Length: 361
Image (tube, rainbow, N blue to C red; front, side, top):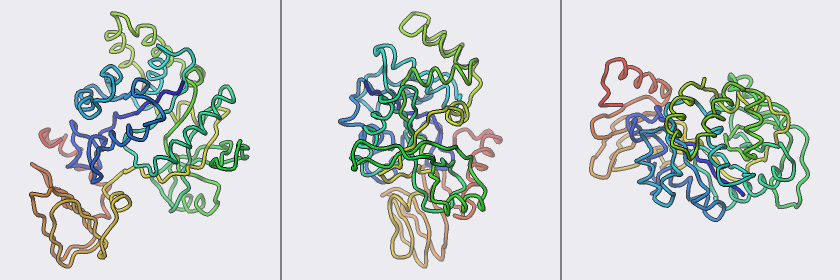
């Protein structure tokens, strides 16, 4: 059976000051009426039932996520003892889905992506499931056809095509290799080649396949995950999870498995995708006015162009003679930044930590 795993452990520091430690990006609504994690669950409707949907997050977010996702059984929202990147996360999830299913198939996806239309997403997942169940040991990922020479995404280089059962399915290929986030010249080469995709970070595989792959490539990690798996459902579960998970050396699933696994297929995503990685992603999802401004909340702009303004309906933000700026108002903190220096928002968070101003984190 197909199980869904929503990874929701990130903090989204580039969305400060709206994103805080107790309300990270995945718990926020960026203007669509539903938070990102709620939208992630919504797109699973008719594909995976709530009882076969897991959310893996950090412990302090278990309560807030349960409030946002009352449809899920409380036990299906699992808190990691500490941050250890995505490979331990999916390994833990593989053991969890195997508790009541002898041969589970897993859909693994981040909680903080925007995907439309959902019907095409569901169709692509069904196609991936067929590819996985039709060939033992295969892993399927989804590639996003690049629209510009992005330096902030990893890339997938496609190889030979995989024949589909019908003409309505999205193109699928063997993965030739994964490429790390490139410098600008190489990103432009990837774009021009036409055989590269952005790595979406969405996967479909058999639980036994990913556990076997972790055993082969990350035996120390796999051993600790196996100890956790043995303790599931026993009185020693919490103690074992705390001890073994904390001792794992964190690593991303891309480094741990994807770049080493022999049989990886990529489906060219038939859906629109945005990883909502920074404030500048808002215009892509919400659009912009005639002056290139993207506004959420009450705003008066005079001689203002190319700006992103995020406030509330009961707090007016006025911009005068502003160009290419980001203005974010929240209770207790306001950000005013140049769009061209947005990566430095992470520096703000680090400086707040250094100063001990935890009330703003």
